[in-house]
Length: 192
Image 1 (cartoon, rainbow, N blue to C red):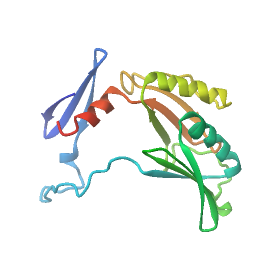
Image 2: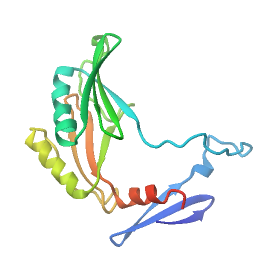
Image 3: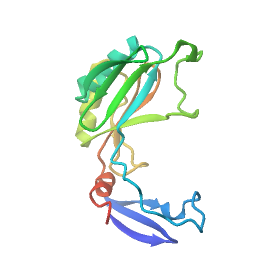
Image 4: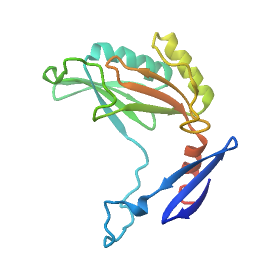
């Protein structure tokens, strides 16, 4: 990954398969900071997402689905706990946790189908190591009876972006993608 300056913003170019992807780091031009505001060092660096809570319309429907996707296909472990008198189902691996919590009956909309274009979560993407891992995950999901899209490249996102898409019982869009060259480069050369 190469970097150069353009009007105070760093531009990172990652060559991959004869193409390049430019990512702008416009942090120096943040509109939240006025010209009189001094830029201070970060108090801490976020290492990753720790956990995500998903509120589901039915634990009875969602738990078997996520058992198959997360424990059966992606190697997560599973636990349960009670919080405020409500059962929660927790899936976790060494890096990340995902918790299912029941929706309150009064909070259920007239339709439980998630609309990814209203404010809120659009989709949740999980990363696996390689393109062949994406293929194996898609095959495993289909074997579980989950309607996963055939895995394919999405060069409009990145030259090596391979993914499969599917939905949970409430219609939340889920994706599994590979650890792409640009992401690896960013992780390995963050300070460079």
